[in-house]
Image (cartoon, rainbow, N blue to C red; front, side, top):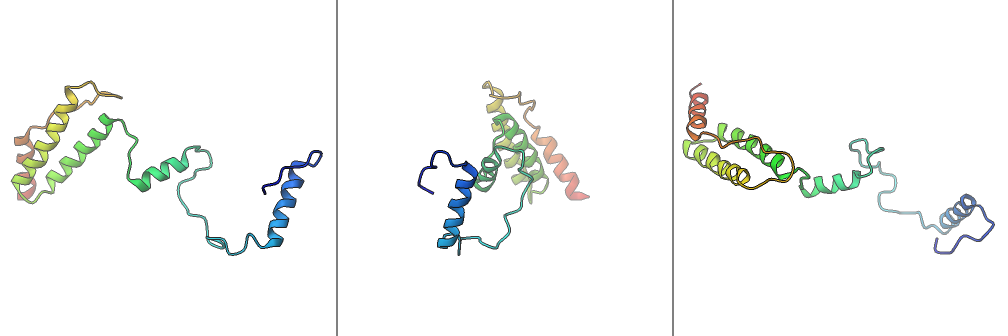
Length: 134
């Protein structure tokens, strides 16, 4: 496929000829993945950036603005606190996420506003005790 298309030859017929000659030379035999189905995933027929999204998913990257990522992290922190084995761990989880929330509150965030305020550690600990006793 390195030669140029001759003038006056239809592009489609020239490509078909190139493919036919490559098949005759055996260049399509024993290709990696031959006879295997294409990897299935979400319908990417209308998404130009499907490959970027798959790469980011494989690499564990996020495209969320920092404020939205922190909102998700705060939700996850409350879930972890609810499932924590001890009060000390609950306090550490809530203190850590509160430090991140305060940091984001005092610098202008890129993207949408944060919409969070630090959690009351004692309220979270009280909820944790209530769940543990139930």
